Length: 218
Image 1 (cartoon, rainbow, N blue to C red):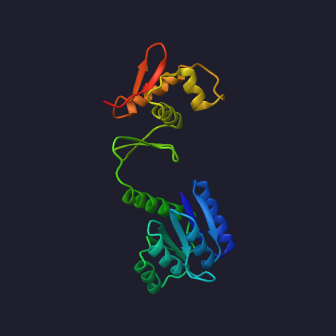
Image 2 (image 1 turned 90 degrees about the horizontal axis):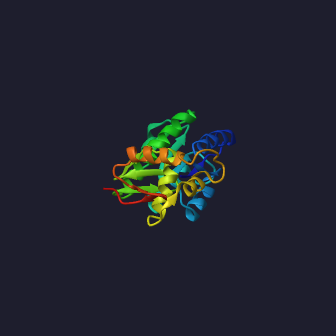
Image 3 (image 1 turned 60 degrees about the horizontal axis):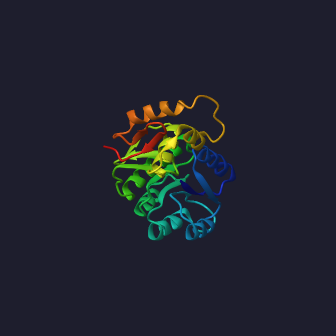
C-alpha cells in the first residue's frame, strides 16, 4: 500500500513514517502542500494522511484536489486544530477520518488499517472462486481470506501458476525455499495435507510417482 504523508514537523514526520514502514506501507513524504499536490499529479496512492496547517497549499486544499481528481485515494486529516469548523470543512470534502494531534502512532495505524480495508472492499469487484494476490501473499475464496502460512501460499501459487504441470517434491522445495531448505522432501506432503484442510475444494491433485498438480476444486 502506497501512502502519501503530508507533515511539516520533521520529528512527527520521521516518527510516524517509521511506524508506517514497520507495518509494510510504502510511504512518500511531503513537507508542504505544493509538494504533496505535485506527487498526487504524478503518482498513485492508496491513502493520503494530511496535516492541515502546512506551508503552501493547506491540507484541505490537497484534500479537495484528491476528491476531485483522485477519488480512489482514501484520506485521513491529521492536525492540531480541534475546532468544529475545521472538522466540518474536512468532512464536507469527504475526508474518511479526522485525527487530532498529538496522536498515538498505534491508533493512527489502526485507523489507517480500518479505512484501507473498507475502501478496498468497496472499490474492488467481488472475486469469485479461488484467487491469489501475489503482492500481499494472500489467498481468497469468494472474497473471504484464507488463513495460509507463507509456505502454503507459495506452494499453492506455484501449482496454480502452471496448472498443466506435475511438480516433483524437489521442484516444489526449490520454488518455496530456494536452496535454503535442508531436510526431508516429505515436508511438501505436510504442506499439501494442511492446504487440503484449509481450501474449500480439492485443488491439489496427487500424481502417483511424480508429485502434485493443480486442479480446479470440486
